[in-house]
Image (cartoon, rainbow over all chains, first blue to last red; front, side, top):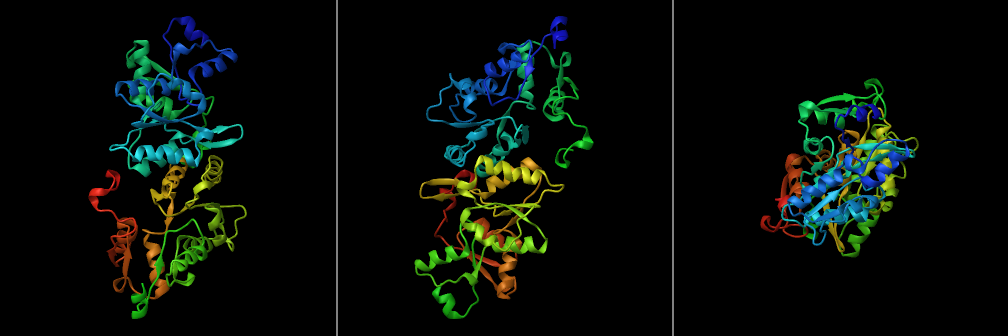
Length: 210
Length: 210
């Protein structure tokens, strides 16, 4: 990272983090010694906010408490769409029913999902990710969610636009073969998979992920 | 119902009820004045129990507390499958993660779902049904659930076998065009939709259900 920055290359951090604001996320990485600022981060919540504003959508939020501040400037009265993120402990039976009722009450339900991950690992074990709950609401309302975040093409296009760089001149570096590498390649970028983080060789993957 | 019984025609009650044992369900209907006994009821939980026994499956249960007694005789130690029903308040974040972990830990995940309903109405509003949570687990584990209950063909076949009647000589009467009428017809039975209960004319249906 320091060498990229020293070289003068333009740089964006593309994250699917939706359990915290960019501020909190950046502070955590700074604490680990990374040279990173909020202005360098492309994340699903701000991307969703742009869509909400463009289309005059007023969201009912089913997200993590720590993400709510990202939507501070968005009108949320009399909702005409649902935004779902990795709400973690907020994925209660009551909250899921409430989000469902808002959706099914619309003439044409609009569901925006901050990612489509299946699951992830935390210190206390595997957890269902936002994608699973997105599928539950999709099925109940017979609607297809609009996914914001990696690997959505629009997400990478936002990052490129923020840098003012065409896809042919950019390379994506990440540990996720689908969200990072696949998404970037479908966008016309080159991509490089690092063998750290969640990287696993094919042989060590669960059959469902091969 | 009294006229059917008086005529001597064979009769089964086919229900997707999975929030209570057949005993409780029958008692409720008896209290309303219906001539019905537990032995006349075909329901998803007993059908699931037959499958579990036949295939030596030991379930992790994600079901309503009131349904648990239906699985009293089933070995549940060291589970090698997950059975999901309309667990209602038991659909907590912790319980969903637990069921997911059991599934993803299997070489070949086996998910048995007691129905595939999208949602239903209770006095306090619409609720997500078992089908939505089934979809969440299917997506997270990249597996397809085996559905027990209406409209599964096997469910109607069980009811016919219990009566000793071929499908051509049976008629299904119900209020649900998909679960009752469609399921029975795909099984070779005739079917009749009553305009009571959840029946709605096409015009009054939510667009998602038309």
